[in-house]
Image 1 (cartoon, helix red, strand yellow):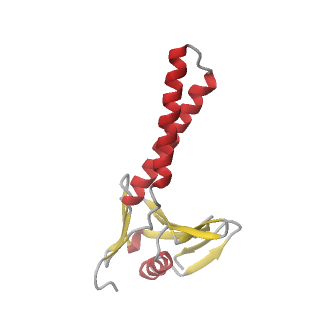
Image 2 (cartoon, rainbow, N blue to C red):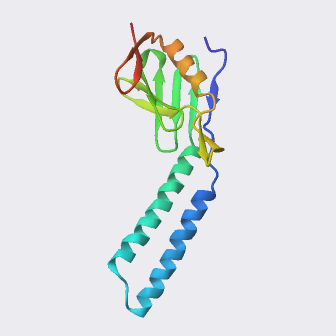
Length: 168
């Protein structure tokens, strides 16, 4: 079925948002330090600065995970890595594939008996009617078709929330 192993990577978001979040967190931290030296620091200021730092850290973690994400398809099965987790499923181990509508593209859940992973098909972020950037796997629909074919999942069903494929 697969003459050679193929590796796919998601589209990467620009790092400008991450940089802006860290600059804002740094400026707010400096302002908090200045207020602290003056002796007057309202409680909500601490909460706000903690929120900004945690938000910037969350954005950085998400960008780091995106840069370490790969999805491999081979004759043996599929392997998904994102920097924090590694999931390897043989084609016969895949029990179900769920397709959920998402804000951008579709969210695909590949589910085995002992492990699962999720990836997004290509979506485009728009601002004021213009396409700004792309997210997800550009070849997401192709990947989905190959996973369904190689795993032998043919029984398509739908419920109110999502469509799913399982063994017949």
